[in-house]
Each structure stands twice: as C-alpha cells, then as structure tokens.
Amino acid sequence: MKLHTFSTLTSFILTFFLSIYSAFTFADPQAKKEKNQTGTEQSSDKNAWSEAGENNNYYIFKANLTPGEEKILSNNAVDKQTPADARGYFLGVYNQQTHMLNFMIGYQNLSGSGVSMSHFHLRCSGEGKEPAICKPGSPSAPVIQTICGMPTQPGKTPDWPSTKANQGRQGLEAKCSTGTSGAIMGKWLVEEQYRGDLMGGKVYVNLHTQMNPKGEVTGLLEKSK
Image 1 (cartoon, rainbow, N blue to C red):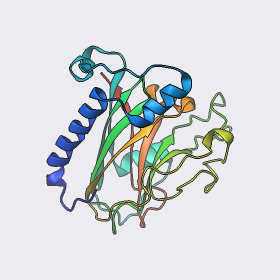
Image 2 (cartoon, rainbow, N blue to C red):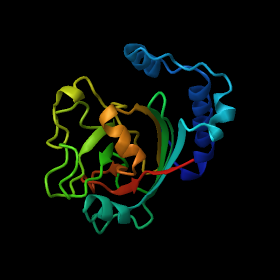
Image 3 (cartoon, rainbow, N blue to C red):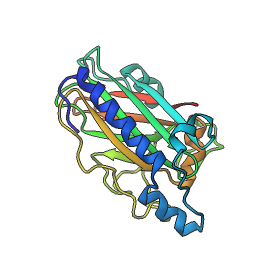
Image 4 (tube, rainbow, N blue to C red):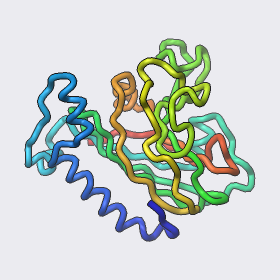
C-alpha cells in the first residue's frame, strides 16, 4: 500500500482493524492449512473478536521505530543526513492458537525514496545460550522473516541460512511501496522456532533505505493484552 502523507494513516488503521476482525471471526486459510496438517481443528467461534480481550490466545504487539532504536538493537548508527524526524510505528495482533501475526507498519519522513527492504529480526544477546541462528558470542541481528524487498528467499544473505526449516519461506511482499511516508499491512504465520522469541520480546522490525542499507528505523515488538 502506498501513502504520501502520514496524516492519512487513520483510514489505514481502520482498514487494519477490520482485517483483524476478519482474522478473528473467520478461519484464515493459511492457518487452517497448518492446523489440518497437525490434526488440530480450526476454531470457528463467531464471537472471537468480542471475546479477544478475555482470551489468552490473542496478544497485541506494538513498537516505535526510530533511528535511535536502530543503534540500540542493530548496533548500527544511521547516516548523519538521515532526517531527524524519520520514524515509524508497528501495530499487530498475534493469535497464539493459529500462530498468525496480523500487522501494520506506518512510517514517515524516511530518507530518499523510502523503504527499500523490511524484515523481522531476532535479537541476540551474545551470551551463548541462544538459537543456532545467532552468532556465538555476538549480539547479531539475523533476519527471520522478510516483510518486503530482499531477500525474497532464504539463503540469499548470510544471516538467513538455507536450513531445512526455512525451505519454501519467502518474503511477505515482493516489493516495498515507494515514498518517504506510507504503510505496510500484512500477515506472518510465525514458524514454531520463533514463537517463543516473539512472546519473549526478542523480535524487532527494521526498515531499510538506500541511504541506510543496514537499517534506518527500528523497533522492538512489545507485548500487551
């Protein structure tokens, strides 16, 4: 989706919540496919949306995306010419039963032509007791899911290994929308090996630009009910 002014995000937020309503009320085909493969019945509760606040299956995730968080989470200082008011916001709802994360990312005043790539990253502590995808002794930030742009498939970058578990995974969108302000809406069926990391506050979102190919604005996903 393309946006040219951040003030128009209100309509997209409404659209986002309508899509979340749909996700709660009707069975998601992709999630249903996964459920059928594991032999678990897909819930068809028509009152799921109204009961979401009392249902432990649903969690809201939020994040403020800033150049400052880019330095903290990715250990990467942005270019000095990066707009001082570059920022973004992540809002998502995770269904712990279907493992689907429906989300929207709004952003404004990015450099150049805007987002060139966007990913979900795993935050590593460098303490050694972490998933194999983390570099030993280093607080690396491996890509665990492309949102838009590159890499479109696993194995294209050193930090997204071409493992058996990653086979068939692709970016959620082939290309990122142009423009320094805009919004990205999508859904991610979170793989089993990353579900605990998501719930444990170890996943963050990074928006990359041509000026800052390693990342311009970043934010850690924080869980709330």
